[in-house]
Length: 120
Length: 176
Image (cartoon, rainbow over all chains, first blue to last red; front, side, top):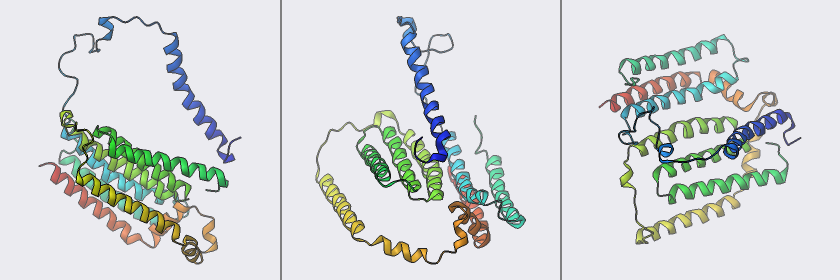
């Protein structure tokens, strides 16, 4: 019904899946009663009085994860064309890609042992 | 892509205008987190341009690397800054602003003149003449994969060693 006719089901899926959250929020916004008071407007902290500041300091651990992610993202970019042409290539290419991934798993183990993946 | 003519033009104009607005947002917004997200929008629009030009691998690589890795790193670097350091100056025009805008508009107009004067069809037809007919059956990305695995097998393995070295170097420097 739209252009690119073999993607009809995809466009229908995209439209419906965009409409569902919009309708969900809009209907509940229309139907819900609004009764505001000072208790309701304060922020929620598991039932107790909110204490402290809402802004936390950004920790270095978040940056370490982004750094490790960048290197493995570049690895993914190189694995993507190999995966697309996997069925026309032979076993030897599979071994080559296995060596590629193995070297980078070595790097991942290094990052793990050096504590770059510690969360707390 | 084999879209009909006017639809392709409308798509290009739409993505181009979103890109220009995003670029203006990167430069002119005062909150640095907003401008970092606007940079992400610009990089996504560039990726959509690559899709409309039949370069599916470059589009995917652009999304993965530029938006997924580099933009995230820029966002994290922006978040290290404190909120009280946002600049509050109004539009004070200095000499530096005038020189920069003059240089940028000169580059813009020279690029517009050069692109419309170059004969792109001459370059395209000379590179298309040495393609084998059997390559039309495989996808764009599949051809890249085949060449990467057979002709360029040794650089493929050396790339993994480069990535390993960069990972070790980055972790060593970031731990200090």
